[in-house]
Amino acid sequence: MRDSFRQLRSELRRQGYYNRPTTKMLAELGINTLLAAVGLVVVIADERWPVRVCGLILWTTGSIGIGTNTHTSSHDATSGKRWVNQLLTYLGYPLYFGLSATYWWHKHVLVHHSAPNVIGIDGDADLSPWFATTLDEVERASDARRFYYQHIQQIVFPLAISLTLISQQVAGFIYVARSLRRDSRTIHHYIDFACLFAHVVLTLAVPMLFFHPVVVVAWYLVRSFMMSYAMFCVFAPAHVPTAAARLDKGLKGIDYALAVTTTTLNFRVGRLGRLLCSGLEYQIEHHLLPDISYMNYPAVSRYVERFCRENGLPYRQYRWDLALWRSFSAIHQPCPIVRDADAV
Image (cartoon, rainbow, N blue to C red; front, side, top):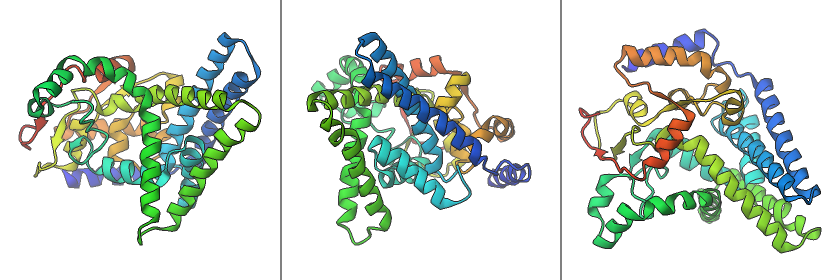
């Protein structure tokens, strides 16, 4: 299978799909930035609450587009120049979102992509002790916690989603602070910290010069809650549904392509969805070929699907609404952890 995958990469490179249409991606980033800016202006300038709500939705819409576009840069897939990708990542994550870039590179690019949905390694797949997504967690739990997993977590989970961005921000701040105390710290940790500090100044301190602090903090939290649900809508459908297998960290003898395709799902979106997701609807392609521009994924998907069929790998794609529903349903139906490579 590895030879077949190498042939796939060679064919895609020969077809020119490794070329990065940087200008087009930056244009989409500009559109999303404009949407977010217009939404922010509406929230600030108009005192009518229905209009402000529309502005908040527009602000969130543009922001999630900025986030997914930045996600591509974090994988060095926006430009052929690494410093451009890093610059865009710093601007998008720590400066705009208050999300540590170095934390993201470690948690997502390094850990998640090397072991998607591997319980005990991939933190995105392991929600314990707050929520149980596997039968093993339910069975090991005490009576009280098992009761919570079976009857209460389904109610708490939709509310907890609203804290996703804030929890990631806190985890990122802690990661950077600890990294700066280590001898292994690099210039990237200092740049990251500077961008995070600038985020606090620009989004909280400066607005407080013109508006009441309570109002500023309230709008910041509301935006964070909205962004958290938007993040769930974009990132969850790929790995959260029970159809996406959870693998044991001790599992051996499984090919990476098989691990990816059994733990990852694609979902279909329309034109607006493509602008907001920046290729994240093609999660199988993204995990197998993260260094290819998301703008090439629609064409690349034909090659990837054929590669999967020829090698007996699953290639699954759902409607976005169905994938979202199954993401929420996963908390109602914990699945077993796969410990046998043959079972995969």
